[in-house]
Length: 263
Length: 192
Image (tube, each protein chain N blue to C red):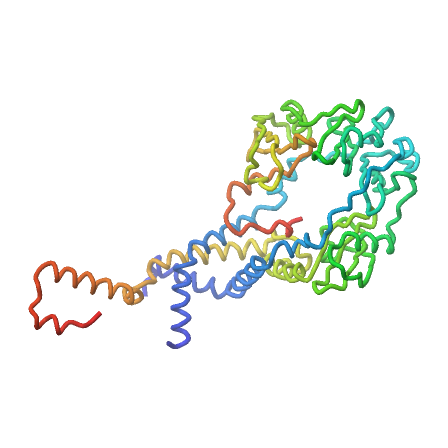
C-alpha cells in the first residue's frame, strides 16, 4: 500500500466523515427546515396589525408641560399613537416614560393595558388565552428589551405578542412556526443554551472540518468514476457512432446486416 | 443491489451533483462562524454616544407639527449634530425639521450627509467619497432610495448610509460580508 496523495485524501475524507457525520446530517436537516419554512410566518409579520391611524390631536401638551410631568432631563421625545390616544414616549437618563400627550397623565402598562394593546395589534380574531409578565430573558424574548408582557392567543399557531412593559409597543410576535424554526436554528448554530452565538470555538472547528470534507470530496470525485459507472450513457452513444461510421465507409453485405444487435 | 453498494453509488452520484454547492456552503459557513458578527455589522465603527439632554426652551411646539407635516403619523425630537431636530412621519413620507425655526431640512444635501457620517464614525479617518444613490446597493437592498453613501478611508473601506429624509444612519456598515456573499445567507431574524 502506497501513501499517494490521493490515498491520503481518501483516508482523511473517510475519517473526518466519520467524526463529523452526525453534525453534517444535522446541518443539512436543520438548514432544510429553515429554508422550507415560510419566512413570513417565521417572522410573525402577518400577525401584527399596523398601528391604527388617529386623527391629529387638537391640543397637545406643550414641551414645558412634558418637562414638568417627567421631572428629568429629556434626551429624546417621541410623539406617537398608542392604540386609542396620542402619547409622548420620553427618554430620560433614568429610562423611558410614557405620558398621555393631551393630559400629561402617566400611561401605565399593566396587564389589562398590555392585553388591550395586544388585542389591537393582533390580526387574528381569537381571544387572548393568558397574559404573563416577563422580567427575565427567555428564548422568545432574548432579543427584546425587558420587561415585557407576553400575551398568548388561542389560535392554532399559538401566537404570543410581546408588549413592552415600559412603552406599550408591540415588539414581536412569536408562533409555532417560529418555535420550530428556532429549534432548527439552535441545532444549526450549535448554541444549545442561548441559541444566540454562531461564533464559538466548537462550531468554527467543526466548520473547518466540514470545509475539508467538502473540498476533499470534490477532489476525490475526479477519481471516483470509472467507465462502468457511465456505461449506460456511453454504450448507446458509441454504438450509434459505430453504426454511422460503418454506414459511411462501406454499405454492409445483406448477411451482416441481419446479425447486428438491434438498438 | 446490496445496501452498502447502493449507499456507495448514491454517495457518488449525489456528490457529483452537489459537490460545488457543498464547497460553497461549507466555505460560507466557515466564514460566517469564524468572523465575529459584530465585525460584520460594523458595530465598532459607529461611535457610542451618551444621549445629551435637549434644551427645550424656544422650540417649535409639537402641536404645530401637524401644520408643518399634514397627516402626521408620528414624530421624534432628538439632537443631530448638536442641534434639536424633529423627525416626522406623515402622509408624504418622512421628513426632517429644524426644531428651533421649523425650517424643513430634508432632503439633506451632501454637506449635511458628510457631517452626519463624520459625527457617527468612531475612527479618525477622512471621508473618501459621498454619493447620492438612486438604486440601493446589495448591502442595503431593502432600504428606500435615494440614500447618501459616505465612504471613509481605512481598512475594509467603512461605509455609512445616511437617509436624506431623516438624517439617520440607515444600517450599520456591513462591509466584510459583502466581499464574500455566497448562498446560504443567515436569515435576518436570527441575528437581531
